[in-house]
Length: 172
Length: 143
Image 1: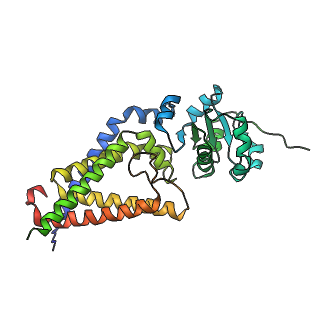
Image 2 (image 1 turned 180 degrees about the vertical axis):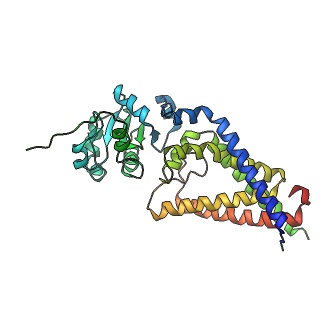
Image 3 (image 1 turned 90 degrees about the vertical axis):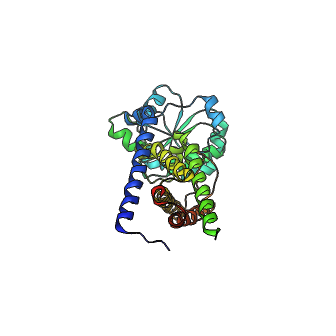
């Protein structure tokens, strides 16, 4: 039977905290470059196509506002808005196409006919806490798209950064 | 009687090896691990990366201490506490109906939530026996 007195408990907890602190310090030191890129809003360098193929990722890659800006400027990815059509019409990222999650299953074959599987696709929705972009990204990966990115900050982060948005005029 | 001694060292070695392996496999692909954490939709963007950068090294140190038979009680307690946190995260994902891989070992590896929960419960048992039996099987200075 284990009997622990106060000094034992104190010592165990102090050593536990030291282990955690050491792990945090080593982890932060080992990944300082990566974390600096994330903190500065540059995000993580996008993988080359060969690296992506090697990794055989089963999850979308998170990207930052800065990376999203670059991807849109370079026209390097298809930008997909996963929100409902009404929100898309009120304002969306430049060049984005609308593909609400609720319509994904029906419209995926149409997308596959138009967009090659090696074309990078960036998905966004209504910011942190909005799961639709991630869920749509998973569907795109399942459909065979090899480079799927998620901009977690979504439309709110883009809009709040003062970046240009496009509005779709509704029909008469 | 050799039984407690065998149980103690068996639990210690398996627990240490599992945590060391988990830490190394995640530490080799921090970005991929951040993606796995992001799938839980619990932390913000930066939080995913901070946890992905630090957690593997905490696991590596705890696992290495267990394998080396040094500071066993704090290391076993830490493994147990981490496992409880993992179980809570898995349960929250399960309750929210998320169909994700657990992110327990190699990033992107396809392990379902149910399988991961069972494995974590087994790890809790190992941590429990390692912690409690260390008192009987180790001199105080190693404990």
